[in-house]
Amino acid sequence: MGNTNWLRQADKPLFEDVLWSRPENKRHAGKLLIIGGHKQNFNAVSEAYAATLKAGIGTARVLLPQALQSMLKTVFPEAEYAPSNKIGSFSRDALATWLEAADWADGVLLAGDFGRNSETAILLEEFIEKYDGQLGVTGDTVDYFLKDIDKLKQRYNAVITTTVAKIQKLAVPDTVIKQQDDLAQMVNKLSVFTDVTKTSFTTFHGGNIIVASGGRVSTTPSKSFREVEVAAYATVWLLQQPQKPFEALTTAIWGYLI
Image (cartoon, rainbow, N blue to C red):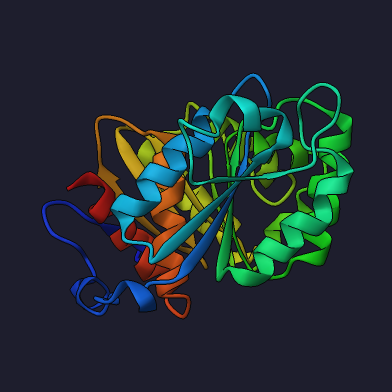
């Protein structure tokens, strides 16, 4: 008997009501804060910003480390800046700026490219503890929580977009996920895992983009998986349809691929 929690999406959206009930007016389409980057790399933030606009966000703001301001003030005029440390990553002093901007927003996307930095790690931990709104997590942001996933996986309003390799680490000890699992095995395991955690996931496996939320799983065939773009679409659609996370995220994937 097949998994009744597994829905397959192909040429048309599984949940057309979600598609047609999206806000038509940008003033009602939500406000998203995108945070990420360090002095050597801000591609994830730039890519996320462009993708959120395509995904239909009402208004998006971007926060980058202060170390990038002189370089980007003319090429990325939409960006805003928060305190950075000597190596160009966010410093702990950025917390107040993050929280103030997050208070303005309906949701936050931690887009990644934070680099490996102990001060930024503390900042992310403190932000997660103080901010309880909708949250999207992707890229190297996930790495900061691999040893303490409980800070994320019990957030009903969070969506993590990442690789199967990282989900494999996040799922322990609840579920044993293996990269060599076939698609049906992966679906079954993600169904079990997300049945015991509040957090939703989007990932790529077996030629499909997978959404897993509340024990339900959808798969949509795709030739590629641009992680930060998928994260942006997932975060925007969840922000606009927060009462239907599985349906919103599944339809976000359809919107991303058309």
